Length: 241
Image (cartoon, rainbow, N blue to C red; front, side):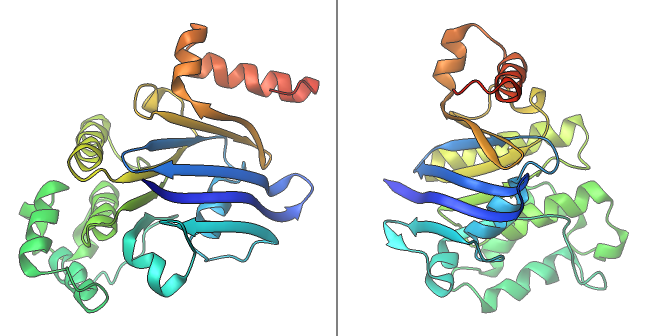
C-alpha cells in the first residue's frame, strides 16, 4: 500500500540551494534513505512534506489522498532538526502532553514507548538532566508514541554513540517488520546505513542524482559510498543518470 507520494517537489532559495523537482514514493514496509551532504536539501524536503515550509510546486499525497495537515499528520511521526523540549518536565511528562493530540496515546502506550527507546530508567528524570543522546531517544519516542504509519527521521543518529545507533536501528527494523511502517530517513553518512534501507535517494545541491532500489547498487558491485561518489562525479561532469 502506498503511504506517501511526492511529485515535483520544488522549493528554491537560490539556484543551488533548495530542492528541485524531487519525486518520492514510500510504500508500507519501505525504508527509504535520503543521502546527501549538509545543504543538499534533505531538511527542506522533510519540512516541505510536513507543510512546515511552503514549496513553489509539489503534489503530495498520504494514503492516496491530498496532504491535509489536520488529517495527514495523525498518521505521521517526525524528527526534524535539533529537538526542543520543556526541560523542566520529565521524559514521561513530556510524552503525556501528546495524549491531547492523539487519541491512542495512553499511559500504557507511553510506558511501552519509553522502554522501546531505552529511556525507561530515566522516564522520571528532568529532561534538563538528559544527555544529547538521551534527548535524541526522547525525540524518537515523541515521533512514534502515537503509532504512526509513516516515520520521517532527519539525521536521527546525530549525537548517538555506536551502541545507541545499533539499538535505534534494531527498533526501526522492528517497527518496519511488525507494523509495516514506512520510514523516510536522511543522513550525510553513507557508512552508517549501508545495509539499512531498501530504496535510496541521493540529493546534491537540491538535485536528485539517483532515486531507486538498493538492488541496482548491489548488482553493480559497488559499495554505497563508492556509488555515491560516482553519482557526484557524474553530476559535476554533466553526465545524466
